[in-house]
Length: 192
Ligand code: UDP
Image 1 (spheres, helix red, strand yellow):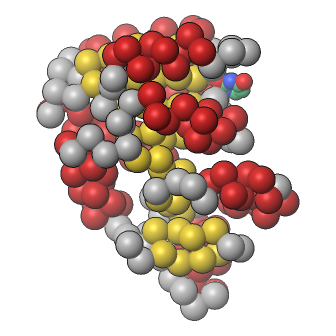
Image 2 (tube, rainbow, N blue to C red; image 1 turned 60 degrees about the vertical axis):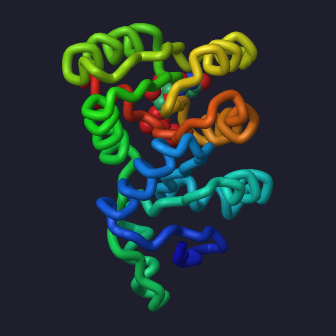
Image 3 (cartoon, rainbow, N blue to C red; image 1 turned 180 degrees about the vertical axis):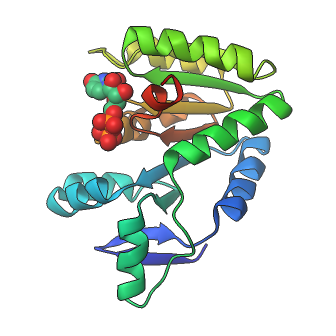
């Protein structure tokens, strides 16, 4: 895939619709996929923390989640097609997952938020199987990772904020041949 480098981070250069089609195919093929939706804070943090930069470079795709990145790319005369936000991707994947009867695991946010998220997903996306949920305040990954391994979901959404969510995915993505994506505060957003 064609990428555009900004501060050493290779961003995929595609429209959201085209990118979604890539993800849908990979999910159907049960290809293990790690997506980083990098906003400007993440790009700056990666610039200052080489370990984190190397970590996110292990992702299969890094998308430009921020108009600042799109503008920066344009100034560098290496434009990316459009901004793709983690939240928009999250909503598209839930909708598609409902239509296609896929399953998803949700990790992140405060206990009352993840509880509410569960209710919203059940109501709005009734054919999407909730493989499991866990709040984002835990010391030990083991129990969650074993649960993901056991339930083998198609998608794993990790919303514990950066850099935690990407470290969690890098370390644990072998637990399921799923789409793994860090989506920051998205559980808070969808539950309002
Ligand atoms: N969070 C979490 N565990 C933590 C710290 C934060 O689950 O140890 C959650 C927090 O409740 C919020 C999200 O992670 O839902 C972070 O949202 P934010 O918008 O700050 O995301 P960021 O921009 O940091 O990726």
